[in-house]
Length: 150
Image (cartoon, rainbow, N blue to C red):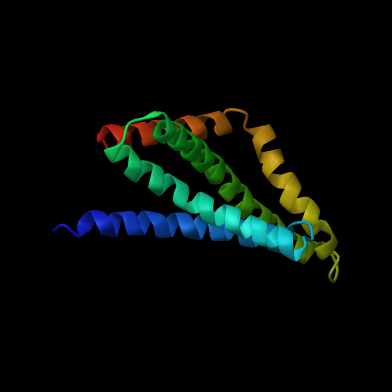
């Protein structure tokens, strides 16, 4: 019975790793061409950010100080932004699929970098209330986890 929390933490961490991997692969496939060093930095940054929420939540159960509080704040804001970017990546792949059928030959490849950078900002411009709400939802979830109410 003591293994259930570890299993739950592992499942949450796997979901977060998959979401960050999807964001990374979308940026690499659809984004502007980047050098090897920039890809390594992007990969490392997203890998570190994928562990941030679980680390902050686990530290929040044991410690209650300024550093843990700020780590929880940063992780919850990042999770809200990740949620937003995750759905933007799905929209980008959907539009890329439509462009494959609409544009002749490999002309859709020239549009891909614009697609990866423009669509998340277009989605945010059309739904002004979504980014603050996702950030607030992430912060509320983190607070409930820290207080042991969730």
